Image (cartoon, rainbow, N blue to C red; front, side):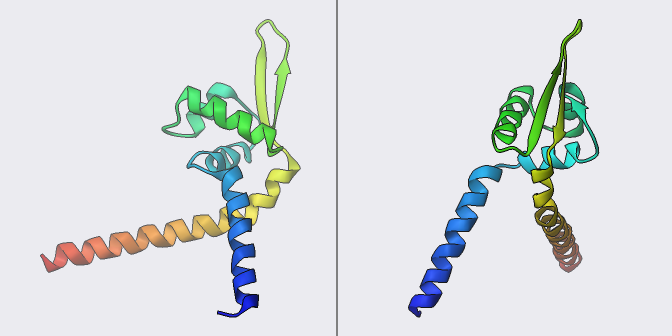
Length: 122
């Protein structure tokens, strides 16, 4: 492998590492997608992301806020109301989300086709 190709590979791996450090896990992109439809309260967001626990949602929201993908707004009460919404920087993930969505759908279809073929062959 040439020095240029090694350098390009190292650059790609570093960029992927940087992205995955921010977007790691299965919840962050789902939360961003749920918020892309509009501002949500914590409980509404929790209902919008099936399977996420209250504790995990709270942690993921803090991480997304720290990376400036979302903002948290507290409206003094009573009762105190906390809302979350996406910030413009989160829109930079739109192409990533679309590509992952397309790949996920294609992959699921492939698995279903393989399973159907396996069932038919049995």
